[in-house]
Length: 266
DNA sequence: CTTCACGCCTGTCAGC
DNA sequence: TGCTGACAGGCGTGAA
Image (cartoon, rainbow, N blue to C red; front, top):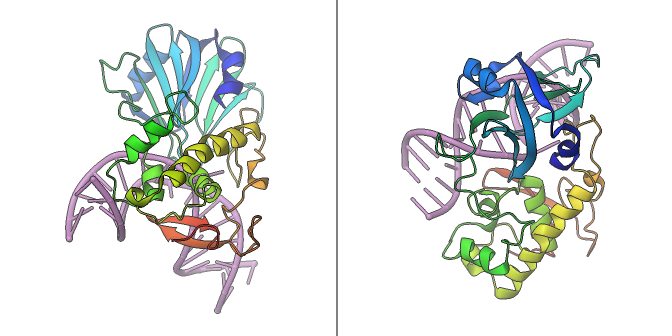
């Protein structure tokens, strides 16, 4: 999403903000948010974990987390409106950025980019799996001494950035690790496989432009394609591509979880 | 530190 | 067809 957006909106100015649901803005209050965002140039677009960040000329950063069902759409103001557009950012290039979010789980902020005004949402977030800082050592360190189940730990953004329910199930399958294994019982070989699997899954998902079950859309409203490449997620009952055993659904840490019971032993 | 339940919203789908 | 309940990509909080 950020890769699509960056070349198309960097350098443009936000000339107006409209909210049908001001509550999407978590901080500051909406009127101050509007004041701080309008008449600002978008200097650069970046990402940290699941946060999309728009660096503004004022040294503020506009931060958007899509939650479960949110999408960012780059549209003409004349295009038909989607059903759940909560915020619209009008750009001086003539297009508008729409935050469409059926379940209202998304969150939007603006704050000083230095973090001095208020801690940035990713202040305590773990390493980025697609950066150089995600070494085997880094993964071992964040899991060091952890007795919890590996799956909930991988979903914890303080340990590793950006993994959600889909990609954790896929990465654990690829690494042949059962999601209910205790982190401190993983062998060196398993840690190595996990370390390789995580960026592999994410890279593959990005190449296929994301995973769409219902609501996820890219900035032009197109569905992703990674759902056709999933190995386990929501494939319960279907045959494992590696060994043919039926994929099983269980609940781990309160989340629907999908495994091959033969390839991923408890 | 860890798990678990729950709340925040709205839609979809299976089963009756 | 209509209703009910389970479930859904995230994450914060509070209790145990």
